Image (cartoon, rainbow, N blue to C red; front, side):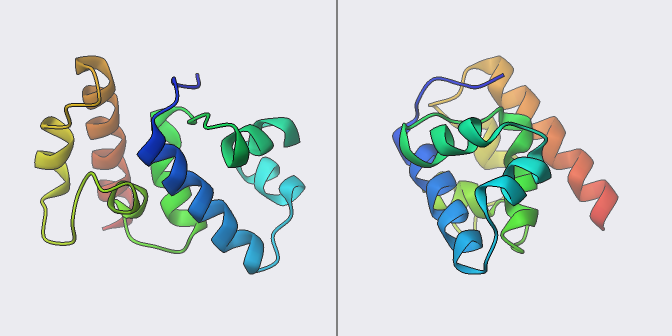
Length: 113
């Protein structure tokens, strides 16, 4: 499920997509990675649409960056910030969004540590 536009998060997603395009990935490659349509990728890049929060760790992996990369680009956390604490206090997310994001990042942490 896509979420309403969040300017900072949308900008961060667009930046990650720009990074991977510079490394040679096509829209079709990116769409295949996320199992979405090409038009979904275009919406993420240009119309301010934000993907499901559960996909944020996949954007981190796609960029070849550590967990929380997208949230750092969006300005939600800094390199010194505890990711779980930052998610718990994120004012721009509702309770369900914070809960989902925290669970997703915890699952990714367990699987990759």
